Image (cartoon, rainbow, N blue to C red; front, top):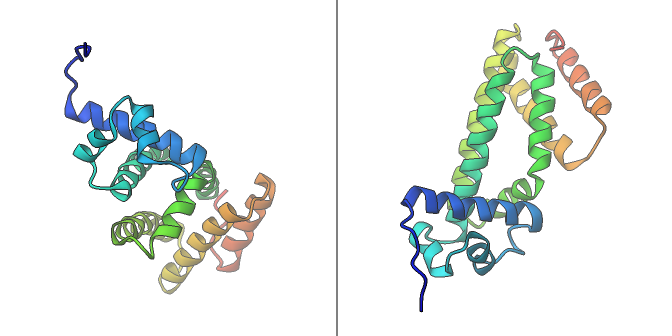
Length: 184
């Protein structure tokens, strides 16, 4: 006899699926995680997932949106912290989710929806870096290239592990190079 299940709000069920997928994608990677494993972890059938998400990439975007939203919420508490420390914090967050980051970069060329998400992600953070550089007095002509260099440096720090001290030295050099006061 089937057991009676309590009615679950659609948003709550979607959140449970995203939470299960997040844990599996972070721990085991996207390619090693089947929709069946996600369903089992969320306590639903595989078909149930497809009521909420068209495919695995759409579920990945749900995971990315949730992780990014939570990260932005925590990040806003750092608004009084110097730029260099904010960037180091961001690198730490990205390193924590390195499997998601690797998946996004691997899938941008094969999934238009992941590529679109990736572009929006970059736009958000490039806008923030640009505003911070402007606030620090970086010359207007240097804002765009310095923003790109900063993003490249952050991405490089994630893919080439270094100590906190080494990362700090890289950021200090980066900001000295363009004459921007070192954001302590």
